[in-house]
Image (cartoon, rainbow, N blue to C red; front, side, top):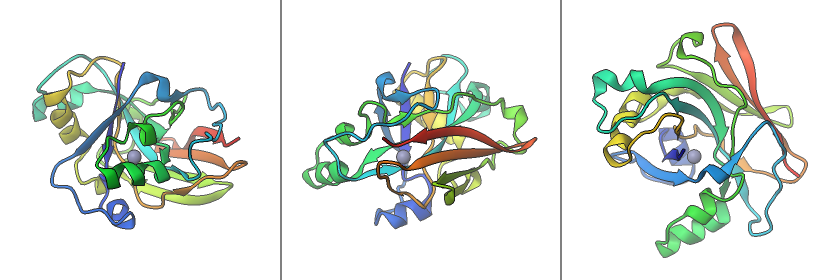
Length: 208
Ligand code: ZN
């Protein structure tokens, strides 16, 4: 199982970090050991003083495949969940300045809190416009609509499968909308997804 992540997939988020709008998807990976499952707490690591939250729609991949063609891309969507792409912004900045790979800033242990539950595409009002939000300590800090993605889910599946063979159970983190920010010990994050049945709590983690 691998975790494929997309950077800067919402124009407003690219802008808030002072990054240019990409002309093709920015791809990076996290190892399976990055997953923080079952709403467990996140322990702030000692090597960073600036861990940021980024709430993202996560696609669980339904089957194996490479070079997926657009007309078949939806067949690769098993279910939809939410995940946090936790980022050590201070380390990332240093890596970017030096032109180094940024795995230590993005792929460290428990950098990917994942919703315990995933929902079928049919349980969403519109797969092309998934609505989701993040609350920090009861205050909404991010509110996303997947129709604002620069590269929609089907395009991402086609693009990444040119380079990485998709395998059943892989996870695709689709990028974060604007509103990212730092975490401190004691913070509680709750992620919501709008399903056909209404707003649904998907993910909860406390920073310790
Ligand atoms: Zn991200």
